[in-house]
Length: 211
Image (cartoon, one colour):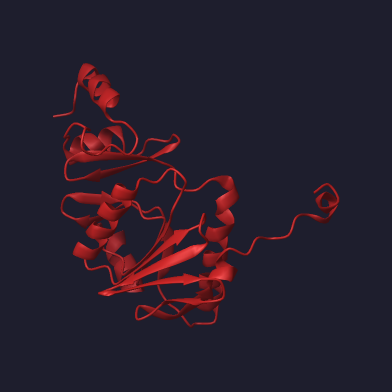
């Protein structure tokens, strides 16, 4: 049963940003109706019956990071060195009670075909970009869900530290500077240095003199 308007307003008052523990439990059907297509400054996820409300992950000035990664994937795809699809913020059930929206997620061509037929698929490679508003506990909870769902490779990119934490099975590593980040064993050809992940495009010539 869908919540009444009074129940909705009461629930809204209790769902504070990043506060999973105090958010009231709701069903997936209620979440799907009230939050799944909501367009505002927040990202909503449904985890173990609770609404996880966080600020949209990236600010305008951080989108160049996503562009650098997507451009690499598209170039490798054109060269037939990688296959599959790399999508952003796609709704995915990682466990029966853990709906997440990873910043970037890679799906094989076979998985993409199954998804077209309404079969939920779990990606094997995920990229999360940490924002200034991300809560550490929520990030750890998300990584735990990815591990439980047997996601093989996760990159956690920190723009503030200009570092990439790579989680692959029991192996965890931190990359920075000229170190190369690899999506092996899922996409061994998908490699990029941390410096290139954070490489900013030049300002337009007309604006250089103003800086």
